[in-house]
Length: 254
Image: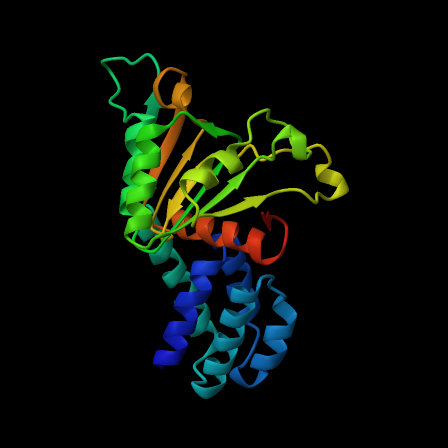
């Protein structure tokens, strides 16, 4: 039964509650010896989701429990998984005028926290980057710990992008071992689009999603808002999404 439990756990981590509910309804009209037919009728997308569904149907064939029981297990596991997700830590981050009524964290402080938390991998995206000495110091320390540091940045205007500053060249001169990516070849639906996401994620465990670019004004003077998320599924999904942009060639290394 362990294989069946493992497959259920993996599937509920990949699909929404609504999708799991629909699968549970479909399951009730099936039998274990129809596991293959069930797999083909569901039609999930994504390699991880398809593998989880394949593992589930294989384990069900080997452990032919009643379909209604399996459906109940899926729903219960899904509920438990979502309840655990709610336990993740989310903090409000704010740079600019503050009030006494709502406690917040500063953008620079939180970004450095994410960088310092990285043990193996760190991925940062920004529209532009300059004048962030404290952040650079934290990045140098991370690379000294053998953390793989990756950036996705907007191209400078001299290379077809939209910013006047060549942030990639500037950062590369300071962080020569970092990897740099750009969004150069765009589908027609994204024509004239730019890298406007501002995120930092470490090891799929902690992430910072913010309005702030990697600039001194964004760290200290602008009115910027964001959230720091620790644990739960969001940091992992964000890191996997950025990795997928690289592996599929949507963004390319320069």
